[in-house]
Amino acid sequence: MKQITSVQNPFIKSLVQLQEKAKVRKQTGTFLIEGKREIELALKGGYELETILFLPEIISEKQLNDLTIKPLNVIEISKEVYQKLAYRDTTEGILAIAKTKSLALSDLKLSKNPLILVGESLEKPGNVGAILRTADAANIDAVIIANPKSDLYNPNIVRSSVGCLFTRQIAVGTTEEVIAYLKANNINIYSATLQDSTEYHTQNYTTPTALIVGTEATGLSEKWRTESTKNIIIPMQGEIDSMNVSVAAAILLFEAKRQRQFQ
Image (cartoon, rainbow, N blue to C red; front, side, top):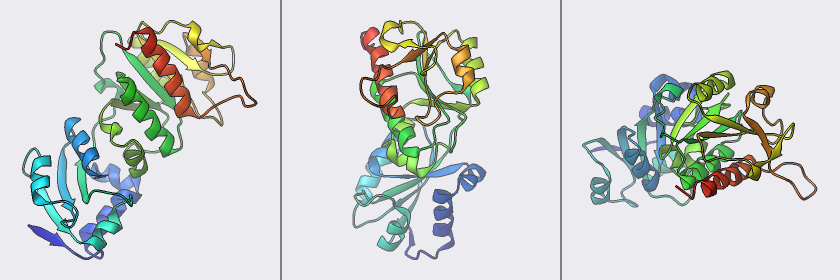
């Protein structure tokens, strides 16, 4: 088994670049996953792993054998190398290099009565991760990111989603492309916005539905407001007029799930 003990190793340096630069992830078609649970969810989600790196003081070879589903390139690394690559303080001694997947709208496979969440121009990786966790909790068909501000394989998104990046179908596209896709598939569009809106709980989400959320700072673009089936609003009863986008997404999704009797 190959061993790497130096942080100056060219391969390790390339992995640091993979963590830090979207351009490198795009060029190589790969990204880094940290943590046993996240790797297991990636495997379950059909992601292909190229290489496993592990710290023997934390995880044993037997545990590696239990995890992997086919022979992989496995590298034993030193504590120094592991600390160079790992983001989390409390971690499990394992990282994987995985191949990215296509995020095209045309690759989505929807049920007969889909429930979809769309987030437009989401900037903070933590919010994207939280939305992916909510989407997993609600077991919806897909998450679509319109006009993405960062690539979904950003390590901060992988980490904050606690592996839920791998458990739901995900696609990206421009706002115009996403609207065209939803309309072509006869999916009702409910845009969460302050303008020309009605309270969210008065609407029927038991038919094919896409719930659209935007950032707290700018909200949704005009295109969503004019092309929606209905604009909806979560009534605010305090001093502020908006809430965190991931919280708003959770409220809307679980109202839809309640109406669908959590089916």
